[in-house]
Length: 139
Length: 139
DNA sequence: TTTCTAGTTTAGAATTATTATAAACTATAG
DNA sequence: CTATAGTTTATAATAATTCTAAACTAGAAA
Image (cartoon, rainbow over all chains, first blue to last red):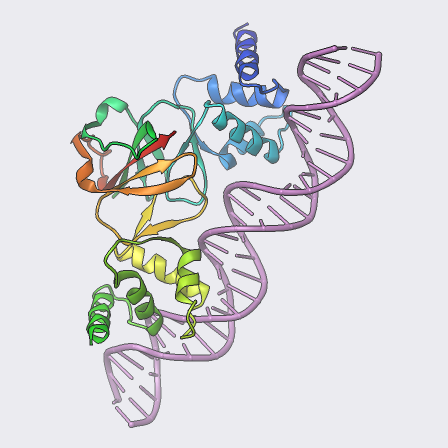
């Protein structure tokens, strides 16, 4: 029944963003949002995890479409890196990352771990949406 | 004679990084570093600019190799973006960017414009290579 | 200076990530 | 139930980058 509650919740969530609650989108919602910790991923890793088990397969094109749709809807946040591959995060709140250049792993840094004492004013007509710090680390 | 001085300077710079001062590398050095303002670019734009005039052509492969070598040597810094294309900056000092989610444009923020009063300690065995702040802005 | 060699350049092929296409499918309004 | 606009899908196309291996060259050593 937890599952059925979640399903209903995700159906509503999707509807509220004008996204039809298809079985593919619901499967991806369950996978991405039905967890405690935040989740970092690329389309490649999401595709593997979603299609690992025997159930219904979701095509790669749909994974791309869905990630794009969920990002526009504000369910996911794109992470800035220097890699030629898009990284996404289920934590859409302002927060920060360690980026390990060796292992190419991203780790969350809680918002409270970093404090800024001076922030510039945004260009005219623009406002700050959020602020992210990436700390590149190496051995 | 300014040109010849620069040439000597770049020859030394390259030698000091164990990079042979080839004519291709020197041409790229002159183009990238012989300027007042810092320069943001992609491999695509650098290739066009370097090969625009009638002089010696530098192959695309060499542009890639050189940008990679200069980045490793610390002459260039890779910029964080969400685009699937690498951006580089001749300003290798710690500095920050506004990222406009609408236009997907990056703008420099001078390092003095941002002050951090609290920074987390890196995971065991790792050290901080650099730290970048990206401020996402929108209308 | 000449010779040798490791480093470098190059064109083109291969790979990787992403986007586009268009036909088949489906959620849902009426 | 039916019509239709939205969605999924396999596949092709595109774009950025990396790989490959042959030709070239800077600089050390003879």
